[in-house]
Image 1 (cartoon, rainbow, N blue to C red):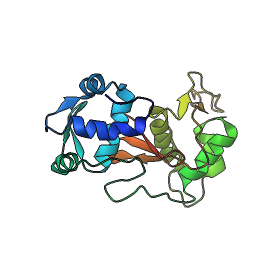
Image 2: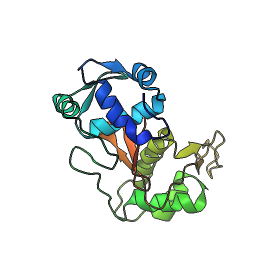
Image 3: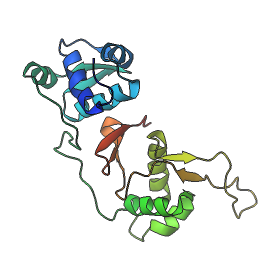
Image 4: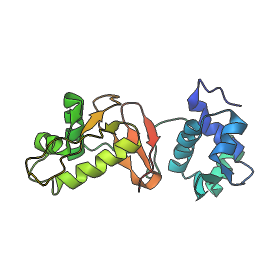
Amino acid sequence: MVDRHHPGQAPTAVLNALAAGACRTIEDLGRALDLTARQVSDAASCLIRRDYLERMAAGCYQLTPAGIEAAARGEIIKSGPKAPSGRVREQPNTLRERAWRSMRMRRRFTVLDLVADAATASDGNPTDNLQRYLRALRRAGFVVEFARRAEASAPTSNGYKRWMLSRDTGPRAPVVLSKVRAVHDFNTGEDVPCNLP
């Protein structure tokens, strides 16, 4: 059982719980370790980034050979922005970083607001880029989408989606990690799972 007030212990607990090599579900691990599904999912993301864990089926996890070795040697998993390549790299002054600054200032916005605030001539298709970014941030709980749309100038348009920043953790823009289906938050060091398409 893991002290749920110390979620940093969860990755090591999940590693040890899977040491026998069997595939176990999030629900099973949560019951066995007295963790929430979110804590198990976060711990699994941490282990996947280290190549210690793999998804065998939807919601079912099993250790890789490297993970079994790590469990056997009693490795303690420490949190941090580590990834299979070594670490998550922060890219300065990207379109998404500038858009994140705009979200923090505006709080409520449309994609066109972010494009106007953040896009430069070298950004290719900023509208498509930011729409994909906002979808990932929504799935990770950083932004919420309003049901009612902002009015559009064209009479045949059904308007623009309106968004609100709901989780402002700091000035550094979250980065989408498509391979592990998560959003990395540089402000907290946390990887927040999100169900990317």
